Image (cartoon, rainbow, N blue to C red; front, side, top):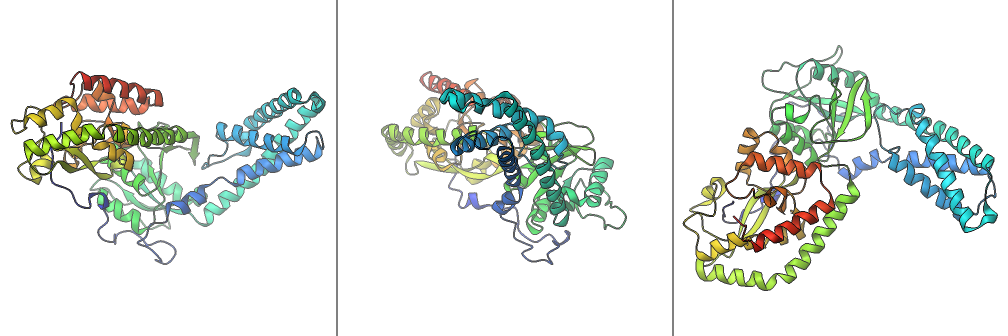
Length: 492
Protein backbone atom coordinates (compact mmCIF):
# COMPACT_ATOMS: atom_id res chain seq x y z
CA UNK A 1 0.00 0.00 0.00
CA UNK A 2 2.84 2.35 0.71
CA UNK A 3 6.59 2.53 0.39
CA UNK A 4 9.28 3.77 2.68
CA UNK A 5 11.85 6.50 2.52
CA UNK A 6 14.55 8.16 4.51
CA UNK A 7 13.49 10.69 7.15
CA UNK A 8 11.91 13.88 5.89
CA UNK A 9 13.47 16.62 8.01
CA UNK A 10 11.26 19.49 9.08
CA UNK A 11 8.34 18.31 6.95
CA UNK A 12 5.83 19.50 9.48
CA UNK A 13 7.19 23.04 9.29
CA UNK A 14 6.66 23.42 5.55
CA UNK A 15 4.89 26.62 4.49
CA UNK A 16 3.52 27.93 1.24
CA UNK A 17 4.51 31.51 2.01
CA UNK A 18 7.87 32.40 0.50
CA UNK A 19 7.61 36.07 -0.46
CA UNK A 20 5.31 39.02 -0.15
CA UNK A 21 2.42 39.36 -2.58
CA UNK A 22 2.94 42.73 -4.22
CA UNK A 23 -0.32 42.49 -6.18
CA UNK A 24 -2.51 42.77 -3.11
CA UNK A 25 -3.50 46.10 -1.62
CA UNK A 26 -2.09 46.70 1.90
CA UNK A 27 -4.31 46.69 4.99
CA UNK A 28 -5.96 49.92 6.06
CA UNK A 29 -3.73 50.21 9.09
CA UNK A 30 -1.04 51.71 6.90
CA UNK A 31 0.91 48.51 6.46
CA UNK A 32 1.63 47.82 10.11
CA UNK A 33 2.31 44.13 10.58
CA UNK A 34 1.25 43.53 6.99
CA UNK A 35 3.12 40.28 6.75
CA UNK A 36 1.86 38.74 9.99
CA UNK A 37 -1.52 37.04 10.13
CA UNK A 38 -3.86 38.11 12.88
CA UNK A 39 -3.79 35.60 15.75
CA UNK A 40 -6.65 33.11 15.60
CA UNK A 41 -7.51 33.77 19.25
CA UNK A 42 -8.09 37.47 18.53
CA UNK A 43 -10.37 36.62 15.63
CA UNK A 44 -12.28 34.17 17.81
CA UNK A 45 -12.76 36.82 20.48
CA UNK A 46 -14.16 39.19 17.90
CA UNK A 47 -16.71 36.55 16.87
CA UNK A 48 -17.53 35.47 20.41
CA UNK A 49 -21.29 36.07 20.99
CA UNK A 50 -20.85 37.16 24.63
CA UNK A 51 -23.28 40.07 24.24
CA UNK A 52 -26.24 37.84 23.36
CA UNK A 53 -26.05 35.70 26.55
CA UNK A 54 -25.74 38.97 28.47
CA UNK A 55 -28.90 40.28 26.78
CA UNK A 56 -30.77 37.08 27.66
CA UNK A 57 -29.55 37.24 31.25
CA UNK A 58 -30.74 40.86 31.45
CA UNK A 59 -34.18 39.84 30.19
CA UNK A 60 -34.40 37.11 32.83
CA UNK A 61 -33.32 39.49 35.59
CA UNK A 62 -35.86 42.14 34.59
CA UNK A 63 -38.61 39.51 34.43
CA UNK A 64 -37.82 38.12 37.86
CA UNK A 65 -37.69 41.63 39.36
CA UNK A 66 -41.03 42.75 37.88
CA UNK A 67 -43.16 39.60 37.76
CA UNK A 68 -41.84 37.05 40.22
CA UNK A 69 -39.85 38.82 42.93
CA UNK A 70 -39.13 36.51 45.84
CA UNK A 71 -40.98 33.53 44.32
CA UNK A 72 -37.87 31.37 44.12
CA UNK A 73 -34.57 31.54 46.03
CA UNK A 74 -31.42 32.87 44.27
CA UNK A 75 -30.00 29.36 43.75
CA UNK A 76 -33.03 28.41 41.65
CA UNK A 77 -32.65 31.56 39.59
CA UNK A 78 -29.03 30.66 38.83
CA UNK A 79 -30.14 27.22 37.68
CA UNK A 80 -32.81 28.84 35.53
CA UNK A 81 -30.22 31.13 33.92
CA UNK A 82 -28.09 28.09 33.10
CA UNK A 83 -31.11 26.28 31.61
CA UNK A 84 -31.89 29.35 29.49
CA UNK A 85 -28.32 29.53 28.17
CA UNK A 86 -28.30 25.83 27.29
CA UNK A 87 -31.65 26.01 25.49
CA UNK A 88 -30.64 29.07 23.47
CA UNK A 89 -27.28 27.57 22.58
CA UNK A 90 -28.95 24.34 21.45
CA UNK A 91 -31.41 26.30 19.31
CA UNK A 92 -28.52 28.20 17.70
CA UNK A 93 -29.50 31.63 19.00
CA UNK A 94 -25.90 32.50 19.85
CA UNK A 95 -24.45 31.86 16.41
CA UNK A 96 -23.30 35.02 14.64
CA UNK A 97 -25.06 35.90 11.40
CA UNK A 98 -24.75 38.38 8.55
CA UNK A 99 -28.32 39.68 8.77
CA UNK A 100 -29.52 39.09 12.34
CA UNK A 101 -33.12 39.97 13.13
CA UNK A 102 -34.65 40.08 16.60
CA UNK A 103 -38.13 39.76 15.09
CA UNK A 104 -37.10 36.58 13.26
CA UNK A 105 -35.85 35.20 16.59
CA UNK A 106 -39.06 36.13 18.44
CA UNK A 107 -40.91 32.80 17.92
CA UNK A 108 -37.92 30.78 19.16
CA UNK A 109 -37.45 33.10 22.14
CA UNK A 110 -41.11 32.80 23.09
CA UNK A 111 -41.21 29.02 22.80
CA UNK A 112 -38.00 28.52 24.74
CA UNK A 113 -39.16 30.94 27.45
CA UNK A 114 -42.31 28.86 27.97
CA UNK A 115 -40.29 25.63 28.09
CA UNK A 116 -37.74 27.16 30.45
CA UNK A 117 -40.23 28.54 32.99
CA UNK A 118 -42.42 25.43 32.88
CA UNK A 119 -39.49 23.01 33.29
CA UNK A 120 -37.96 24.93 36.19
CA UNK A 121 -41.34 25.35 37.88
CA UNK A 122 -42.04 21.62 37.69
CA UNK A 123 -38.59 20.77 39.08
CA UNK A 124 -38.97 23.25 41.94
CA UNK A 125 -42.47 21.97 42.76
CA UNK A 126 -41.22 18.40 42.96
CA UNK A 127 -38.41 19.52 45.26
CA UNK A 128 -40.57 21.72 47.52
CA UNK A 129 -44.33 22.12 46.87
CA UNK A 130 -44.33 25.33 48.89
CA UNK A 131 -42.36 27.04 46.09
CA UNK A 132 -44.97 26.24 43.41
CA UNK A 133 -45.88 29.17 41.10
CA UNK A 134 -49.33 29.66 39.57
CA UNK A 135 -49.95 29.48 35.83
CA UNK A 136 -50.71 33.20 35.51
CA UNK A 137 -47.32 34.13 36.96
CA UNK A 138 -45.53 31.68 34.67
CA UNK A 139 -47.34 32.96 31.59
CA UNK A 140 -46.66 36.61 32.37
CA UNK A 141 -43.03 35.83 33.13
CA UNK A 142 -42.52 33.99 29.82
CA UNK A 143 -44.21 36.80 27.86
CA UNK A 144 -42.27 39.62 29.51
CA UNK A 145 -38.96 37.76 29.18
CA UNK A 146 -39.64 37.28 25.47
CA UNK A 147 -40.36 40.97 24.87
CA UNK A 148 -37.43 42.25 26.92
CA UNK A 149 -35.08 39.66 25.40
CA UNK A 150 -36.19 40.58 21.89
CA UNK A 151 -35.55 44.26 22.54
CA UNK A 152 -32.14 43.65 24.12
CA UNK A 153 -31.13 41.41 21.24
CA UNK A 154 -32.19 44.08 18.74
CA UNK A 155 -29.79 46.51 20.42
CA UNK A 156 -26.99 43.92 20.34
CA UNK A 157 -27.56 43.15 16.65
CA UNK A 158 -27.62 46.83 15.72
CA UNK A 159 -24.42 47.48 17.65
CA UNK A 160 -22.67 44.57 15.96
CA UNK A 161 -23.63 45.74 12.49
CA UNK A 162 -22.37 49.21 13.32
CA UNK A 163 -19.10 47.82 14.67
CA UNK A 164 -18.64 45.56 11.63
CA UNK A 165 -19.19 48.49 9.27
CA UNK A 166 -16.54 50.53 11.10
CA UNK A 167 -13.85 47.84 10.96
CA UNK A 168 -14.55 45.23 8.25
CA UNK A 169 -12.07 42.37 7.99
CA UNK A 170 -9.99 41.48 4.93
CA UNK A 171 -11.72 38.98 2.65
CA UNK A 172 -10.84 36.95 -0.44
CA UNK A 173 -13.59 36.09 -2.94
CA UNK A 174 -13.25 32.82 -4.88
CA UNK A 175 -15.11 32.43 -8.16
CA UNK A 176 -15.72 33.74 -11.67
CA UNK A 177 -18.66 35.08 -13.60
CA UNK A 178 -21.48 37.52 -12.90
CA UNK A 179 -22.39 36.02 -9.52
CA UNK A 180 -18.86 36.51 -8.20
CA UNK A 181 -18.79 40.04 -9.63
CA UNK A 182 -22.02 40.92 -7.89
CA UNK A 183 -20.95 39.38 -4.56
CA UNK A 184 -17.78 41.49 -4.64
CA UNK A 185 -19.85 44.59 -5.39
CA UNK A 186 -22.29 43.84 -2.56
CA UNK A 187 -19.50 43.40 -0.01
CA UNK A 188 -17.90 46.66 -1.14
CA UNK A 189 -21.18 48.57 -1.08
CA UNK A 190 -22.38 47.19 2.27
CA UNK A 191 -19.56 47.11 4.83
CA UNK A 192 -22.03 46.21 7.61
CA UNK A 193 -21.46 42.57 6.72
CA UNK A 194 -17.96 42.96 8.16
CA UNK A 195 -16.03 41.88 5.06
CA UNK A 196 -13.74 44.04 2.90
CA UNK A 197 -12.66 42.32 -0.34
CA UNK A 198 -8.91 42.64 -0.91
CA UNK A 199 -8.47 40.08 -3.69
CA UNK A 200 -10.22 37.76 -6.09
CA UNK A 201 -9.20 34.13 -6.69
CA UNK A 202 -10.12 33.15 -10.26
CA UNK A 203 -8.80 31.23 -13.23
CA UNK A 204 -6.23 32.66 -15.66
CA UNK A 205 -7.68 35.10 -18.18
CA UNK A 206 -10.38 36.50 -15.90
CA UNK A 207 -10.73 40.25 -16.14
CA UNK A 208 -10.81 42.44 -13.04
CA UNK A 209 -14.06 44.14 -12.17
CA UNK A 210 -15.04 46.75 -9.65
CA UNK A 211 -17.92 48.93 -8.62
CA UNK A 212 -17.96 52.67 -9.32
CA UNK A 213 -15.54 54.42 -7.00
CA UNK A 214 -13.67 51.18 -6.22
CA UNK A 215 -10.42 50.05 -7.83
CA UNK A 216 -10.57 46.62 -9.51
CA UNK A 217 -9.54 43.85 -7.16
CA UNK A 218 -6.19 42.13 -7.73
CA UNK A 219 -6.62 38.74 -9.40
CA UNK A 220 -4.98 35.65 -7.92
CA UNK A 221 -4.66 32.71 -10.28
CA UNK A 222 -2.95 30.09 -8.11
CA UNK A 223 -3.12 28.59 -4.63
CA UNK A 224 0.35 29.97 -3.89
CA UNK A 225 -0.79 33.52 -4.71
CA UNK A 226 -3.82 33.05 -2.45
CA UNK A 227 -1.58 31.84 0.37
CA UNK A 228 0.64 34.89 0.13
CA UNK A 229 -2.41 37.16 0.04
CA UNK A 230 -3.85 35.54 3.17
CA UNK A 231 -0.65 36.17 5.11
CA UNK A 232 0.12 39.67 3.82
CA UNK A 233 -3.41 41.02 4.31
CA UNK A 234 -4.33 39.16 7.52
CA UNK A 235 -7.33 37.72 5.70
CA UNK A 236 -10.03 36.51 8.12
CA UNK A 237 -12.81 35.54 5.66
CA UNK A 238 -12.92 33.57 2.40
CA UNK A 239 -16.05 33.62 0.26
CA UNK A 240 -16.78 30.91 -2.33
CA UNK A 241 -19.41 31.93 -4.88
CA UNK A 242 -19.73 28.31 -6.02
CA UNK A 243 -19.13 25.14 -3.97
CA UNK A 244 -15.42 24.23 -3.67
CA UNK A 245 -15.86 21.20 -5.93
CA UNK A 246 -16.87 23.58 -8.74
CA UNK A 247 -13.67 25.64 -8.55
CA UNK A 248 -10.27 24.60 -9.96
CA UNK A 249 -8.16 23.61 -6.95
CA UNK A 250 -11.21 24.41 -4.81
CA UNK A 251 -10.48 21.85 -2.10
CA UNK A 252 -6.84 22.92 -1.96
CA UNK A 253 -7.96 26.53 -1.48
CA UNK A 254 -10.42 25.39 1.16
CA UNK A 255 -7.65 23.57 3.05
CA UNK A 256 -5.41 26.66 2.75
CA UNK A 257 -8.03 28.91 4.32
CA UNK A 258 -8.69 26.39 7.09
CA UNK A 259 -4.98 26.18 7.93
CA UNK A 260 -4.79 29.95 8.36
CA UNK A 261 -7.87 30.13 10.59
CA UNK A 262 -10.11 31.91 8.07
CA UNK A 263 -13.86 31.63 8.26
CA UNK A 264 -15.07 30.12 4.98
CA UNK A 265 -18.45 30.98 3.49
CA UNK A 266 -20.54 29.92 0.51
CA UNK A 267 -22.43 32.96 -0.79
CA UNK A 268 -24.42 32.29 -3.94
CA UNK A 269 -27.74 33.00 -5.60
CA UNK A 270 -28.34 29.25 -6.02
CA UNK A 271 -29.06 28.52 -2.36
CA UNK A 272 -27.00 25.35 -2.53
CA UNK A 273 -24.69 23.92 0.12
CA UNK A 274 -21.24 22.54 -0.64
CA UNK A 275 -20.48 18.87 -0.20
CA UNK A 276 -18.08 19.71 2.61
CA UNK A 277 -21.02 20.61 4.85
CA UNK A 278 -22.68 23.76 6.18
CA UNK A 279 -23.32 24.93 9.69
CA UNK A 280 -25.75 27.28 11.33
CA UNK A 281 -29.15 28.53 10.21
CA UNK A 282 -29.64 29.75 6.61
CA UNK A 283 -28.55 33.37 6.31
CA UNK A 284 -28.28 35.93 3.54
CA UNK A 285 -25.98 38.69 2.34
CA UNK A 286 -28.09 41.30 0.54
CA UNK A 287 -30.38 38.53 -0.73
CA UNK A 288 -27.62 36.05 -1.63
CA UNK A 289 -27.89 32.73 0.22
CA UNK A 290 -25.05 32.49 2.76
CA UNK A 291 -23.80 29.34 4.49
CA UNK A 292 -20.83 28.78 6.76
CA UNK A 293 -18.65 25.99 5.38
CA UNK A 294 -16.93 23.62 7.74
CA UNK A 295 -14.28 20.96 7.26
CA UNK A 296 -16.25 18.47 9.29
CA UNK A 297 -19.76 17.94 10.67
CA UNK A 298 -20.61 20.63 13.22
CA UNK A 299 -20.31 18.52 16.37
CA UNK A 300 -17.40 20.03 18.32
CA UNK A 301 -18.06 18.20 21.60
CA UNK A 302 -18.21 14.80 19.90
CA UNK A 303 -14.98 15.50 18.02
CA UNK A 304 -13.25 16.47 21.26
CA UNK A 305 -14.41 13.16 22.72
CA UNK A 306 -13.00 11.42 19.64
CA UNK A 307 -9.62 13.08 20.16
CA UNK A 308 -9.60 12.17 23.87
CA UNK A 309 -10.55 8.58 23.05
CA UNK A 310 -7.77 8.40 20.44
CA UNK A 311 -5.15 9.66 22.90
CA UNK A 312 -6.20 7.29 25.69
CA UNK A 313 -6.58 4.17 23.52
CA UNK A 314 -3.37 4.83 21.59
CA UNK A 315 -1.39 5.35 24.81
CA UNK A 316 -2.73 2.12 26.31
CA UNK A 317 -2.10 0.27 23.04
CA UNK A 318 1.51 1.48 22.95
CA UNK A 319 2.11 0.05 26.41
CA UNK A 320 0.32 -3.24 25.74
CA UNK A 321 1.91 -3.73 22.31
CA UNK A 322 5.43 -2.77 23.36
CA UNK A 323 6.64 -6.43 23.55
CA UNK A 324 5.21 -7.11 20.09
CA UNK A 325 6.80 -3.93 18.73
CA UNK A 326 10.13 -4.93 20.24
CA UNK A 327 9.88 -8.31 18.48
CA UNK A 328 9.03 -6.64 15.17
CA UNK A 329 11.96 -4.27 15.51
CA UNK A 330 14.32 -7.17 16.22
CA UNK A 331 13.02 -9.12 13.20
CA UNK A 332 13.51 -6.13 10.89
CA UNK A 333 17.00 -5.52 12.26
CA UNK A 334 18.07 -9.14 11.78
CA UNK A 335 16.53 -9.64 8.31
CA UNK A 336 16.99 -6.19 6.74
CA UNK A 337 19.82 -4.52 8.64
CA UNK A 338 19.93 -1.10 10.30
CA UNK A 339 17.07 1.33 10.02
CA UNK A 340 14.13 -0.28 11.79
CA UNK A 341 11.78 2.73 11.64
CA UNK A 342 11.27 4.76 8.50
CA UNK A 343 9.69 8.19 8.24
CA UNK A 344 7.70 9.46 5.32
CA UNK A 345 5.87 12.70 4.59
CA UNK A 346 2.10 12.29 4.34
CA UNK A 347 -0.85 14.67 3.99
CA UNK A 348 -3.17 14.95 6.97
CA UNK A 349 -6.23 16.95 7.99
CA UNK A 350 -6.77 20.22 6.05
CA UNK A 351 -3.87 19.22 3.78
CA UNK A 352 -1.25 19.63 6.51
CA UNK A 353 1.94 17.58 5.98
CA UNK A 354 3.26 15.40 8.79
CA UNK A 355 5.85 12.65 9.22
CA UNK A 356 4.34 9.16 9.40
CA UNK A 357 6.14 6.34 11.24
CA UNK A 358 6.19 2.65 10.23
CA UNK A 359 8.36 -0.42 10.58
CA UNK A 360 10.54 -0.71 7.49
CA UNK A 361 9.49 -3.59 5.25
CA UNK A 362 11.77 -2.82 2.27
CA UNK A 363 14.45 -0.32 1.35
CA UNK A 364 13.65 1.86 -1.70
CA UNK A 365 16.32 2.69 -4.26
CA UNK A 366 16.20 6.43 -3.47
CA UNK A 367 13.99 9.14 -1.98
CA UNK A 368 12.33 9.88 -5.34
CA UNK A 369 11.20 6.27 -5.72
CA UNK A 370 9.86 6.30 -2.18
CA UNK A 371 7.82 9.43 -2.81
CA UNK A 372 6.41 8.53 -6.25
CA UNK A 373 6.29 4.74 -6.63
CA UNK A 374 3.11 2.81 -5.79
CA UNK A 375 4.20 -0.33 -4.01
CA UNK A 376 2.19 -3.40 -2.95
CA UNK A 377 2.84 -6.60 -1.03
CA UNK A 378 4.12 -8.48 -4.10
CA UNK A 379 7.30 -6.40 -4.28
CA UNK A 380 10.12 -8.91 -4.61
CA UNK A 381 12.53 -6.84 -2.51
CA UNK A 382 10.66 -7.56 0.72
CA UNK A 383 12.17 -10.05 3.12
CA UNK A 384 10.17 -12.69 4.97
CA UNK A 385 9.93 -10.39 7.96
CA UNK A 386 8.68 -7.57 5.76
CA UNK A 387 6.00 -9.74 4.15
CA UNK A 388 4.84 -10.98 7.54
CA UNK A 389 4.61 -7.44 8.89
CA UNK A 390 2.62 -6.34 5.86
CA UNK A 391 0.22 -9.32 5.97
CA UNK A 392 -0.49 -8.82 9.67
CA UNK A 393 -0.47 -4.99 9.48
CA UNK A 394 2.05 -4.99 12.35
CA UNK A 395 4.16 -2.54 10.35
CA UNK A 396 1.52 0.09 11.21
CA UNK A 397 2.05 -0.14 14.99
CA UNK A 398 4.47 2.84 15.23
CA UNK A 399 1.65 5.03 13.98
CA UNK A 400 0.16 4.79 17.45
CA UNK A 401 2.73 7.43 18.34
CA UNK A 402 1.38 9.62 15.52
CA UNK A 403 -2.06 9.26 17.13
CA UNK A 404 -0.73 10.25 20.56
CA UNK A 405 0.96 13.30 19.03
CA UNK A 406 -2.26 14.34 17.28
CA UNK A 407 -1.03 13.87 13.71
CA UNK A 408 -3.56 11.07 13.15
CA UNK A 409 -6.63 9.41 14.59
CA UNK A 410 -7.25 5.71 15.17
CA UNK A 411 -10.04 5.77 12.58
CA UNK A 412 -10.14 7.99 9.51
CA UNK A 413 -9.13 8.16 5.84
CA UNK A 414 -5.67 6.70 5.24
CA UNK A 415 -3.01 9.38 4.65
CA UNK A 416 -1.14 9.41 1.36
CA UNK A 417 2.03 10.98 0.00
CA UNK A 418 1.84 14.52 -1.48
CA UNK A 419 2.66 13.27 -4.98
CA UNK A 420 -0.28 10.86 -5.03
CA UNK A 421 -2.63 13.33 -3.32
CA UNK A 422 -2.08 15.70 -6.25
CA UNK A 423 -2.50 12.93 -8.81
CA UNK A 424 -5.65 11.45 -7.26
CA UNK A 425 -7.24 14.86 -6.63
CA UNK A 426 -7.08 15.61 -10.36
CA UNK A 427 -8.45 12.28 -11.54
CA UNK A 428 -10.93 11.26 -8.82
CA UNK A 429 -13.74 13.68 -7.82
CA UNK A 430 -14.10 13.96 -4.09
CA UNK A 431 -10.61 12.74 -3.21
CA UNK A 432 -9.58 16.14 -1.86
CA UNK A 433 -12.67 16.15 0.40
CA UNK A 434 -11.20 13.21 2.36
CA UNK A 435 -9.04 15.68 4.26
CA UNK A 436 -12.02 17.16 6.11
CA UNK A 437 -11.34 14.79 9.01
CA UNK A 438 -8.14 13.64 10.74
CA UNK A 439 -6.46 10.81 8.85
CA UNK A 440 -6.39 7.42 10.55
CA UNK A 441 -4.56 4.14 11.00
CA UNK A 442 -7.63 2.32 9.75
CA UNK A 443 -10.89 3.40 8.16
CA UNK A 444 -14.20 2.41 6.65
CA UNK A 445 -12.58 1.79 3.26
CA UNK A 446 -9.95 -0.53 4.77
CA UNK A 447 -12.46 -2.73 6.62
CA UNK A 448 -14.28 -3.17 3.30
CA UNK A 449 -11.14 -4.64 1.76
CA UNK A 450 -9.96 -1.48 -0.04
CA UNK A 451 -6.26 -1.79 0.76
CA UNK A 452 -3.13 -2.06 -1.31
CA UNK A 453 -3.64 -2.00 -5.09
CA UNK A 454 -7.41 -1.33 -5.07
CA UNK A 455 -9.69 1.32 -6.54
CA UNK A 456 -8.82 4.85 -5.40
CA UNK A 457 -12.26 6.07 -6.46
CA UNK A 458 -13.94 3.47 -4.25
CA UNK A 459 -11.71 4.42 -1.33
CA UNK A 460 -12.58 8.10 -1.70
CA UNK A 461 -16.28 7.19 -1.83
CA UNK A 462 -16.08 5.15 1.38
CA UNK A 463 -13.96 7.79 3.12
CA UNK A 464 -16.42 10.56 2.33
CA UNK A 465 -19.28 8.31 3.41
CA UNK A 466 -17.50 7.79 6.72
CA UNK A 467 -17.12 11.55 7.23
CA UNK A 468 -20.74 12.31 6.35
CA UNK A 469 -22.12 9.62 8.69
CA UNK A 470 -19.45 9.84 11.39
CA UNK A 471 -20.19 8.85 14.97
CA UNK A 472 -18.22 7.50 17.91
CA UNK A 473 -20.11 4.22 17.60
CA UNK A 474 -19.03 3.91 13.98
CA UNK A 475 -15.41 4.39 15.07
CA UNK A 476 -15.75 1.56 17.60
CA UNK A 477 -17.29 -0.70 14.94
CA UNK A 478 -14.43 0.03 12.52
CA UNK A 479 -11.85 -0.72 15.23
CA UNK A 480 -13.57 -4.03 16.03
CA UNK A 481 -13.65 -5.04 12.37
CA UNK A 482 -10.01 -4.00 11.97
CA UNK A 483 -8.99 -6.25 14.87
CA UNK A 484 -10.79 -9.14 13.20
CA UNK A 485 -9.04 -8.54 9.87
CA UNK A 486 -5.63 -8.62 11.60
CA UNK A 487 -6.31 -12.15 12.87
CA UNK A 488 -7.38 -13.11 9.35
CA UNK A 489 -4.07 -11.77 8.00
CA UNK A 490 -5.86 -9.11 5.98
CA UNK A 491 -2.99 -6.67 5.63
CA UNK A 492 -1.52 -5.43 2.37
